Length: 178
Image 1 (cartoon, rainbow, N blue to C red):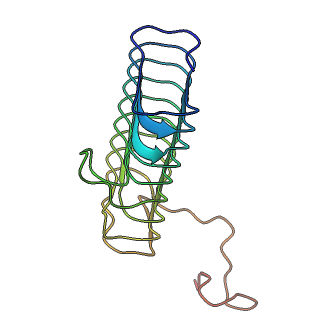
Image 2 (tube, rainbow, N blue to C red):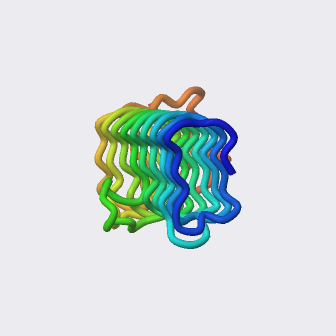
């Protein structure tokens, strides 16, 4: 269960779980979960975990079926969440143990992003927020706070080769009439 490491803790029946190396990691309760490397990473789940932290510093998973690739101080709080890398990113709830609402969220990278709804995603950037009451909402950019479900937010959008008439377009497609 532990290959190499220092100050590594495995508690509460973390069956079939694995810590590869690093130091100050903690597995508290999850089954079938892994921390591969880094410093101070933790997975704290009661029951089936099936979660993974690749590396990084002080990353935390509090939900089942979640993934953090690397980075610093990221928290996957909602189930089936994905954080690729970056720092101070949160999925599924604000960084508290009692708030684990939301799930199926993605933060690919960036810093200080919060994808807290359901079926939401932030591609990258800085200081983006998708609140826990929103669904199917996405952000590409920085300093954006989502206000509506089913919407994609961007700072700027450039469309190359925009059609100049509606001929042959499907409903909802964009064209320019100048």
